[in-house]
Image (cartoon, rainbow, N blue to C red; front, side, top):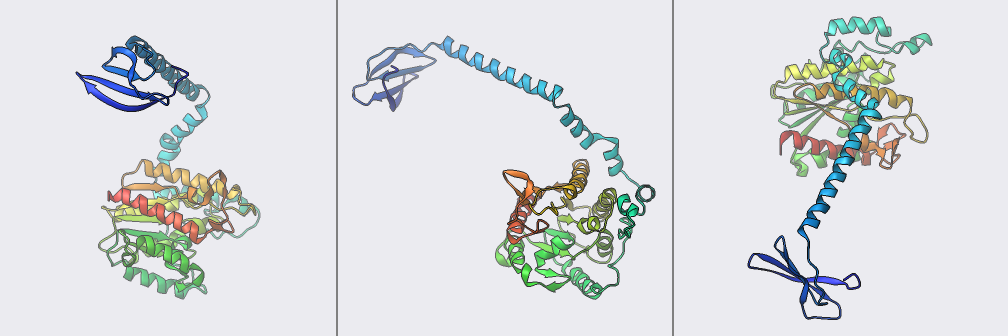
Amino acid sequence: PAESRHVVTAKARENGILKVFVDEEDEAEHKPLFGGSANGVEAYSSSGSKWQLNSALFMGFMGVMLALFVAFLLSVILLITMDGRELSSHMHQFFNSDTCYEQLHFSPDDMEKKLRSKHHDFCLSESIDQGIECQCLNPFVQVPRKDDEFYDSWMDEHEQNVAKAQERFEIGMLGGSDIERFQGSRFGDPFPDYFPIRSVFDFYFSENEGSDLKAMELGLTEDRIPNLLWRLTNGEIAKHPPMIWWVLIGETDLADGCHVESVLMGILNVVKYLRHSCSKSTIVINSLLPSTSATDGVLGEEWSDIHWINSRLECFAHRTSRVDFYNATEHFLIPNNPSKIGKILMEDYKVPTPLGYRKWAQGIHNHAKKILGT
């Protein structure tokens, strides 16, 4: 009865019929709640009221629910078809467009000529128009770091990387500043501000700390794409490559004023080289990390360029075997405001803090475990 409160106290199966007993607060004696059985179910109550469970009514109710679900599903499909054409078009372009196909199957020589003709030696045309000197390197060549005040330390660190690459490890991390910080160093020299980041790396990727995955950090501060290509062709790929190459490169190239297409093709050139040289390795492209010059951390024009590159890198990974894409963006954004970088996650909204590195490292660890099937 509606005025009674029932609590299930016992159930028993007798002659194939499930009997459920409910108890009112003011009585202990069990009497039938509704007589007979429907679909093999009988219920008993202390109130003495008899209700018959109608199987047809139950089936009718389920039919109504099914009809409502189908109607909801059709409305969603209609919404996607009529009002979501932009999203559908974007997804089609994202994975199937001629532009994406061209990016996946490019000839380096042809693409180099195309980029030079479009972007004035790979730089942003806006920079050229403003008379700014082009600092962008050809993303298809292999060159060491230019001879500057950091050249000697850069070369020393490269030689150390060649030695480290001979060891056995599951993950090889390749890149520039964001990767070298995992080592707790800057331009090859220990940097105390980065020691907490090194602790994060050891926790997730060092056998000495009990990690189930061993990674090797092979990053050098402010490396450009051509610098990384040179290192790879000069000893940083050993005879026994890791199962996973984790690549994050291109941030400094963007800072040099390189056009987004130049940066994109340079990253793809690195990935294609690794894929060709290491036939048993999976190459994971880490998304370029979010960055902004806004004092409140809101993503702006810089993010537009980064997002443009990331979306096409994901397209490449989606359509290329042994290549994966890892989107690390969410690790550095405020959960309830995805258009804003968290200050506790990125110092000056550009460089990950130890907490940001911890979230990112955990994501790398978990993603690598899925790839390895462990």
